Image (cartoon, rainbow, N blue to C red; front, side, top):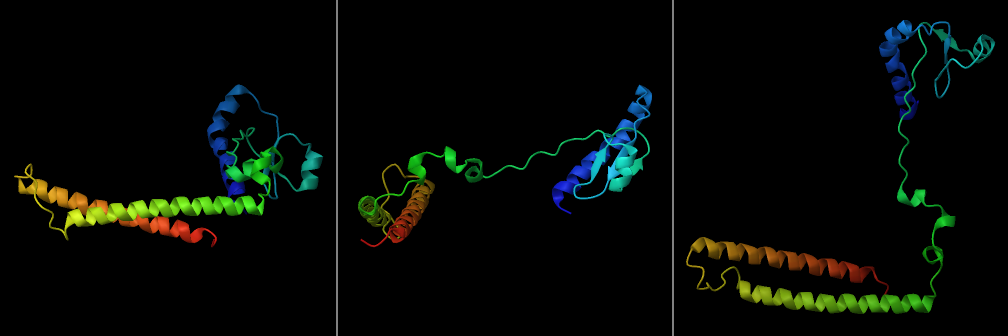
Length: 176
């Protein structure tokens, strides 16, 4: 039995306890409610006693059942967009020569960015001076100096992570 059927069944049974006193007061007696087996379990008052007997349904004593619809499961964005509604450019093949040119441009851009980031990292490491950068005039308070050293160390770690990410992206591109 799947989760949707269990939840639907539980939600269908919950109002029985709550709705029984209310419907008894409203005078809605006389309608027979049936519980029919099978996946999913069906609660209905819309079938005749003969149909209920044929389907193996049992009568439920009391009042009509209030059904609360379970929320519909969300679909992934790719499932929600059918093929026919996608733009032609999203499904069209790209000419191999055009794709090679795009890959070449992407490689060049990534290599340029990698070079710039490596230069910035070298400058940061030079200024960091193995954890002992020169003190500046505005750092009379030793804690300010320590804070600047910590910021420099964090900046170096970020640059190293950026460089590693650029190298991973370059590795994903096809060889020239």
